[in-house]
Image (tube, rainbow, N blue to C red):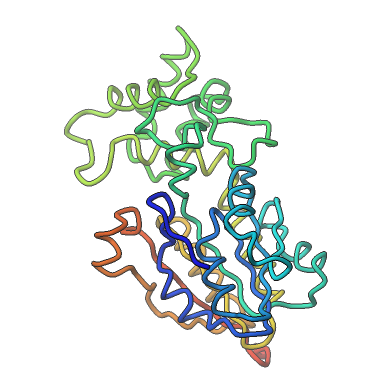
Length: 303
């Protein structure tokens, strides 16, 4: 049973199945379960006895996936946890190793449009941006507590925002009068801070600032590095690690870790990208890029 809705369009779905090659009797991990689209496809392709561990940090996503995937019964184990703990999760599930791991680092439409946590600059919502509401620091906390230099570093390091210092200065000036609490306030501030001649043509002027804050709040790059290293160590010989990223910081990290590990063989010299047909049906897929590596049957001796 594979379900599709206007809110649920898994990115690069056919490519994921083609590269992971799910098989009956094998075990797979979906590290970003979301609403369960990739998971459902993996379970269908590995029927009748393939198993899947689904991980998600977002409690709302976990509950949505439970509803959507309940027909798969004991073939599916859902875990509400940070995917950086993938090795412990696999061990706790009773498996010594797995036959494929998928990471889809994009945000679901449910989170962007219905989560009410300030992930989207298109809606006026609280500046929260926590993937896991059990975390204590929100985007508003960073904006209202960090020094001007710290904010500029966040915007530049995690958003590659060239106007980082100018925007940070405007944030500090704004919060002397009142605290920043909503996405609407932040969008308006960024628009004023960045001169019109520097507004990007293809993306919203606040895109990189929102990306930077989200990454900082959730420690996304640190968690990604941990899941890649720990996940690679959990792969059975020949098993594949498949990562879909959506911006250059993620993609660069994936590429570097894949190429630096002697126990992995990189299968994609260039990232796999969505086709024109997929992008036309799901515009959010346009920035997706997928890299795949396989666990070597014998570790390479560097000597």
